[in-house]
Length: 308
Image (tube, rainbow, N blue to C red; front, side):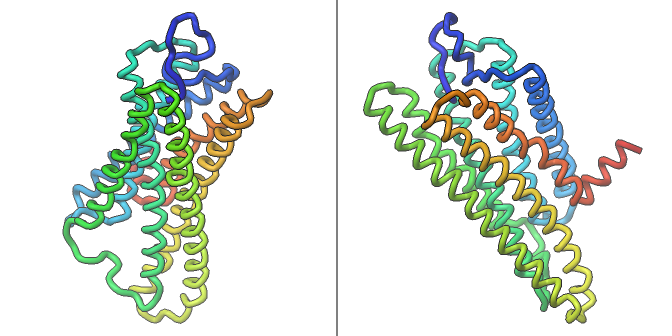
């Protein structure tokens, strides 16, 4: 939460967040992006989730990870971005202090889950590419419910929930000690839950690109028919995942730079930085369903069935 409004006479801070002086066209475009993110991620969850439920053994592991990422995207849009829209169009939201503190913890929780879920997708696919390199084994692994995968995803949600508790605590007490502790917490949070995951995503992306290059060189040496079919399929999937992760790095990296520059070097460009950060935060959530549709057969079939 960016701020808590104390009286209706305050015109700088509106409702649940710090209001930005964006142009009407910018506000309208932001609303469209938020709505597109909600509809798009809901579609990803419904279509891929239906496929996973129908597939014996629970479907592919990558599909389950994509669903987890889409759920985190959707929850961020519903719990935060929709409230920011209400604030930006000028409708003041007044709530109790306890409710604002609750939302602070939820926003920190969902933001962290979103980052680590995307990193897990990047790391998982890098691991998959490494396994696909000839000689090839069983890419699907043992059939049955992927208990280890579900455990890891569950830990992402649980551990980040525990991590978000201090955000609620520091927003309760407004004394000097709690303020200093809150600043320290915010700094550590930026390093651990924003900067570090983005650096790790960049590393896994470079590793994936190198692995794809290695696959292209050894592809002519693969004589196994199963391998000939699987390597191009994994390469196509890798391109989609790489595009997704690069979009995340660009959008979140822009947001981090803008927000931190605003926090420590406020000047004449402060309002523009807030607008940039706002759009950078929503770009990935809104555009990721499009990228997934390009590379996912089930999503492509669903879109084609609607269009035709």
